[in-house]
Image 1 (cartoon, helix red, strand yellow):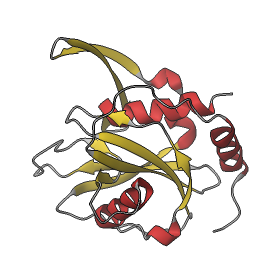
Image 2 (image 1 turned 30 degrees about the vertical axis):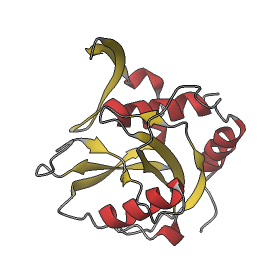
Image 3 (image 1 turned 120 degrees about the horizontal axis):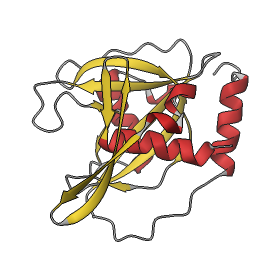
Image 4 (image 1 turned 180 degrees about the vertical axis):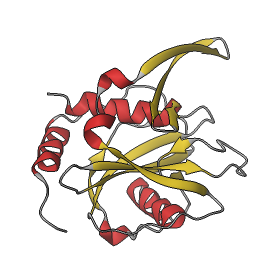
Length: 190
């Protein structure tokens, strides 16, 4: 992998020095993982997808590449890398995994582990048309700006939940994806 940009080197240092406390919640047994791909550019960027409109669940939503852990997967990191390859053709060997964020319980009952990885600047990606409508980049500096996320408090099954919302260009980023980016921002804040 090419030398890291100064901005990305600072991000990695803050990310690795500020490891969050593990969640003390009872988590579901169904596991999934997503790759939080950061592209090593002079101005680093975050790679996101818009899910295909034809999907049964979360159709048209902005998301990170990811999915359910298969029985054959050696780890959740393996799951995230396998799913990124299936959804956007990112070769696992091109991803430098720098760590994971605390697992989040999804609205569909999965324990989802965000895996943070660095991609080389020149990596090509190709969306799997059956799963991904489009792929786009968001400048990392902008993604990590806490003020861009607005809270929305909702009730689900009689329990209060806070959902985070944000816009980037024509993309509406909300729910778990916005929450993961916001958590990453909190973790690396100066």
